[in-house]
Image (cartoon, rainbow, N blue to C red):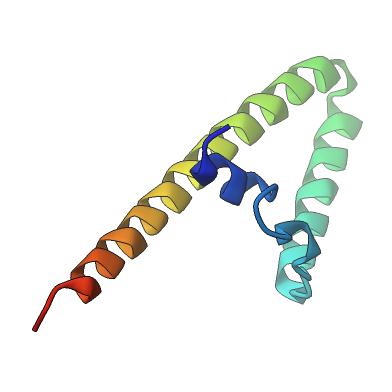
Length: 87
């Protein structure tokens, strides 16, 4: 695992200790759960397809978040290099 991956996945520093104290985040999650429950209530035969869809969406989201994170780290590293140049 690269340092960049370690930083992203929390094995380099204690990212797992970050407190997600954001009520809007939890309200949005509740809304997603409510919508999912309504879909499955109306169309119970879609449970397997919904699970596959959610897994694929989660994987895509995770890859996108990692890409954004890596770009941010690279910009930070470039900024550090720039700051080391003599004035």
